[in-house]
Amino acid sequence: YFSLVGRHGSRYEQSDTRFRKAATAFNKADSLGILTAEGKKLCKRLNIVWKAQQGRDGELSALGERQWQEIGRRTYERFRPIFEGGSIEGKSSTSLRCIFSMAAFNDGVKSCSPTTRVTQQARKSELWIVRPHHDDERISKQAKAIHKEWDKSGEWNNIRKDWDRSHNAPDFISKVVTDESTFLKECGAKYSGRIARYAYSTVQFGDNFELGDREMLSRLFTPEEIYNFYVYNTARWVNYALGRGNDLVEMKQAHMRALIEDIIDKGNDAIKGKNPHTANVRFTHDSYVGPLLSAMGYDGCVPQCSDDLEAATTSYNHTLICPMAANLQIVLYRNKEGKVLVRSLINEKDATLPIKCDTAPFYPWSDFCKYMYNNLARFDKAQERVLKNAAQ
Image (tube, rainbow, N blue to C red; front, side):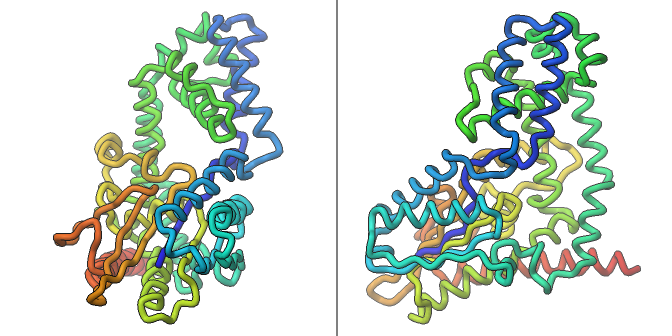
């Protein structure tokens, strides 16, 4: 039996805001005649990416479709007995990029196994499965409001903004403009760290629709500057939805209960012969895949909340754990004695859990389920404390 939770494949950015700000700043600098030769090359690349983005906010790219088709084919080759003559049930967020990713995965499987039966849907009534903490009616509106307010005005967010302003990018600026003062004052760049981050993220994001330029990035940005961009971006993930040690963040993971229980319930049905499908696949977004992996406690997926932004981010690599087309695959095996073992793969590589077991990364299904429910109890208690404190 096979179970999957996946993020949509590579896409266009959800908004062109950063692209527009970066391109506009460099276009103005070009009109003022203060761009270096490297700056002109960067300006051209920024405009190419921005132009390609316009009118396509959030759409799945051709690359994203290929990613999931290829994952589908590899999954079939790795677990062929599950799919030959088997049945896939697919559920998706109502977002088109998730729906098309689901279809691409199933097409990849069926290109290898035409006899595999596929049912796929994206119903609003079932969104609680793939987007649990936005659409599960059991989740308190109060909890959502508290978390949103904390994220908007919490002290840690001010620390993050101050950290960003204190980390400039003089090496990058010196490579692209001849007059830093004019560039920052007259071109809307404001401070060098931010415009450097916007320029870097624009060119880097272009990879998602095959218009990036990695050689340019390695030429224009120092390793220290790239590290600073990573800390800034990842710190919010850790201190918003992924980390341990903060009740408000752990409350976010409490919302993963519906999805984790769906994984376990359908696995139990498969073991008992009551699941009509040999595979259940679910397609969602990084804002659910990341918290899910943290809530489930996979090794390397559980960072610690901290106001020290570098401490919060350096023990956790969000780029590797939750890229475009990130996926968790859970496979059940039954031996001749009837014992059921579970194997987890994160991005198609074996993943381990802090469960004492001589057969890791294959764990007894009963131990796996017990461990997951113990985790959920922890997060439920965190949510209870938050709501209780809010009521006082």
